[in-house]
Length: 493
Image (tube, rainbow, N blue to C red):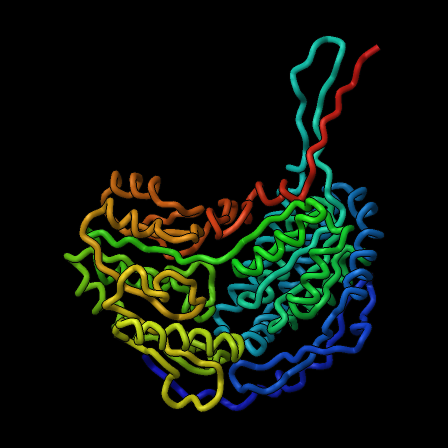
């Protein structure tokens, strides 16, 4: 692993201004004046503060969205699609600044954050193109009746996102509800809210007031108030399983439509017929270390490697990790930046320490990289000599930690891969087409890659089984989930 000392603070980061929320076309502070600090994970310095919204602030945002929802719906899909494309174009004009802001706010490497902004732009264009697919259908009837269905927007949608892909999630995950005709109240991750507020500023020049509102604050207060508000019938949440459970419990009071994109403990099954070097390099890519330092629900953190190639795969894996450059995430050469915030860094390190105490061997990494007295850095880490009951094998770490396990029998490794409450993604590496299809069918996951690296083509439904979530995203199914189906039967006189 290559390391270089992080540079001094970026002057542009130090100049990030005091921020306000955007509600109903107006920039406002929290009613009680509470603030949340935004801390640069590289320098550990405060670069901005954002409002810590309370229930009254959330109510104002929901009210603004409700006021705007009917006129936004009545614009029709073509007008909405045109505005979403315009919004995408405005974002492209500021893409570099947005990527750099996410680097300083969240710590992920600049190359990954550029890809995030591009991905958000692509999602806006994609859902603008899908907007007419909110159409209904006709049903068979007798000569005296006509029956048809309508897909109507809910009105107000709450979109709550986490810290790991700040702008990509802020802009990309409002695309479907907006295209479907809803007004949105967006709450970004409390640690990485800055680029969502820039999105609000860009959107204010394109969308009518109240169509996109951005409230900032803590999940336990701001997010909880948004989920609980009786005038928010549709809630979409991305985050941890415990938080997802809390969202469901709160939403149950009003029987809300909830979708959840939660955690994963995703297996990769490496068969003995593949090139171990190629599989190992792809496994590192699938861990999203260079994209977001392993902070991804889709990361392939459980590596089941066949005995016949285990040693060769492990050697290749360690070689690949040693090639990764750790450094200032604003540096073009950096592939491993810091984690997003201090408590998360400490959590990841505690998983590694716990694995040691349970008998695991640290084959690579295992701590803070040398030469980094500041910043929330954790070395890319490989753990071996594991058994399936160890905490680090069972629980989501959400950082650059890979658990490498052996297997011999295919039925047994499928059972082991499925022996988790998670079911988000899985990856199969093999040249055997029959083995690939049979294994894919047997794995309990919402998205299965064969010889993949974690990249998803646009339009392929993404969503987890079991505790990894409810509903699908990134496809037509997501657009339609932001509508309610109504059936109309007309009796002809």
